[in-house]
Image 1 (tube, one colour):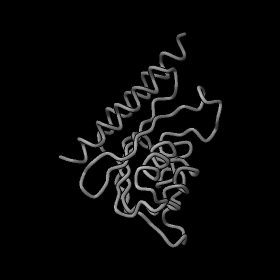
Image 2 (spheres, rainbow, N blue to C red):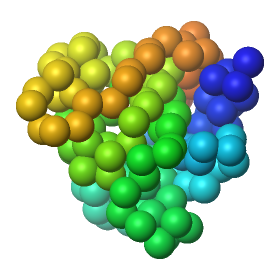
Image 3 (cartoon, rainbow, N blue to C red):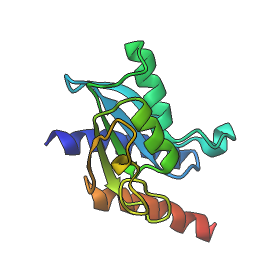
Length: 150
């Protein structure tokens, strides 16, 4: 299934973050033809920048690729439910479809803590969670387990 294929691409990005000692969150943006046009992974520690989330990295790359801030024909795949900042960026980029893996119980903005996409911002993407959820959650668990034992 394409959803799983694209989430596996996001998982590959998350593994890059993990290899760099970052919280393993990865994201890809797919165009209407199914091609990856944006990739990103969490780089907050390396960049020393609170804005260096996987979704923002991928959105930036996709906008550059298309030479447009509007990503209307695209879909975003991310291993962890987006936070409020990333949900806002998704709204502003007009991304119509969001697929995420694991829920984010502390700051998830697709329904776990709040649902920014239900607010009246003039754009509400379709959201599907739980894509390869166990694999996404396992990667997070593995990272934090290693962090606690080191």
